View 1 (cartoon, rainbow, N blue to C red):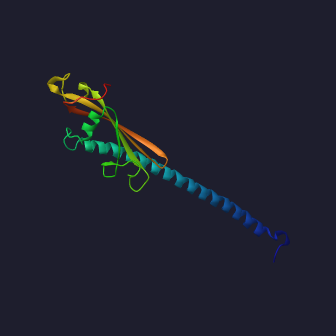
View 2: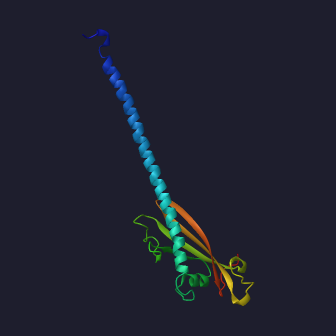
View 3: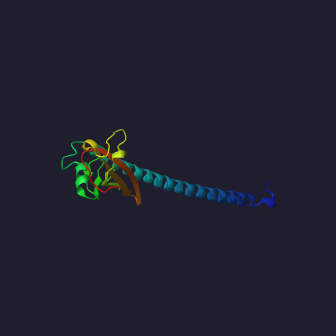
Length: 172
């Protein structure tokens, strides 16, 4: 019934197959762990960029809200500051506290740096202001929104223009 030359051959073949399956299993687990790490890193990078964009959007909302001649308005504060104005924004798009206001329960925050860059009448496209004619100027603002968290940093820059009678900041 049993061939003496085949004694233990099935056991040897089964052990070899188990070893091959074990190597394939370990490779699959290592590959899935690596893919999970890459997906997490990509998600965190996208989240960091989105928070930086949220900072620019918050500035746009603040700039278009209310009377820019009031002392509390962001454009007024930037014009009279004589230098950059820096603050963090919260999830609601309002000024927040740096170090404490994080986005979506994560560890990412958005910090805005806004600076008046002088008047450039030719930059207000769609308006013919002339060189200071009629008291109108085109005030230029540089807005930099930097987000940081998860040991990542991302930045979004915006150049904003305002048709105004005011002119401040350095001429660039």
